[in-house]
Image 1 (cartoon, rainbow, N blue to C red):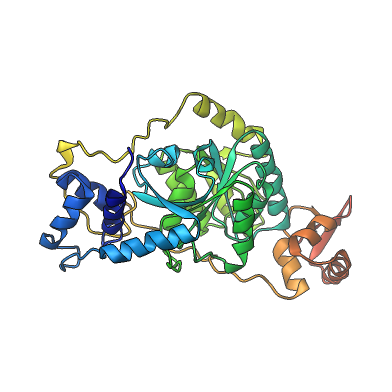
Image 2: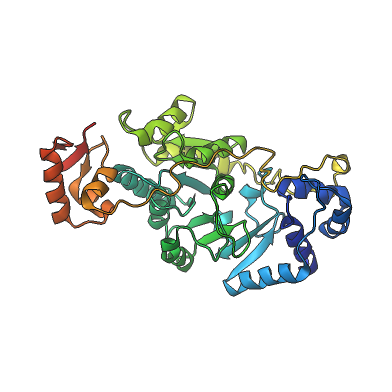
Length: 391
């Protein structure tokens, strides 16, 4: 399928209409036979709030397309050649996504890596090694551009291929200080994907919505560190609902950042301690062409859906109420050296050089601060110049 410019404009106006999400969009297309006809019918329909649904005007939609083009992004529709096939196979796939960068990258076999924004240095180090190994195995790494685990997964796979999924519009990078990371991803041949319109500032509930795209772009999702209320567990939940694999990296039972991942393992997620634990599981899926045909492709010839009820809910993600906003969404980076080091330390021993690199502090400052923490009984020293946090 390839939309004409007029059809793309109609699709954009329809999906940007208040109360219309992916499922509503699909129902309207099948009921009326196309986006243009659905737009004409909207004034005769009553939305969820009891009000008439008024789509944005053509000029507004044209302005969004032009703004995206100026930034180097283009809108790709469900069913078109450049629409990622794995995402297309998800029932909650966005009808339109805006892609910047190399459009073929999101179509390569991918694995999502997600985890805590407030990650430990040990977790960050493992993320880098795992992501780099997956890249060397030919897999694209997908993540959400957040600080912590996400950012390290992207940075480790700049050369092998990475895809960042935004919660807001392409011109509203979150966090803002990751704009340079976006540039690096694009310069290296990666891609950045957004569902939301240009100018859209991400809100708390947009992050769980974004997470189903992260999982939808991948054969499986690896959770490295996650507290029990972490948004990473939402990504794992979406992966399960999409029929994808879920992997989890075990952690110390003394570290709250490992509670969510350890729970996932108890619930049946594949334990990951090395790259092969992922590649051995997904290799048969890739070789067997799993999801290759895209069961979620928007159907325009489904008479059985012509009389399906219309669900008016702009956040209807596969008919699922979005989970609560995770409580680690906007955890700030600790400012002083002591607090920062404590945040990066965990019960897992970590070398002081790696700790300094993760914390962004000089080795001298780290050594001085660790001495203070040792005198206070907060850390334990191990061989090979490694330290761990005491409970």
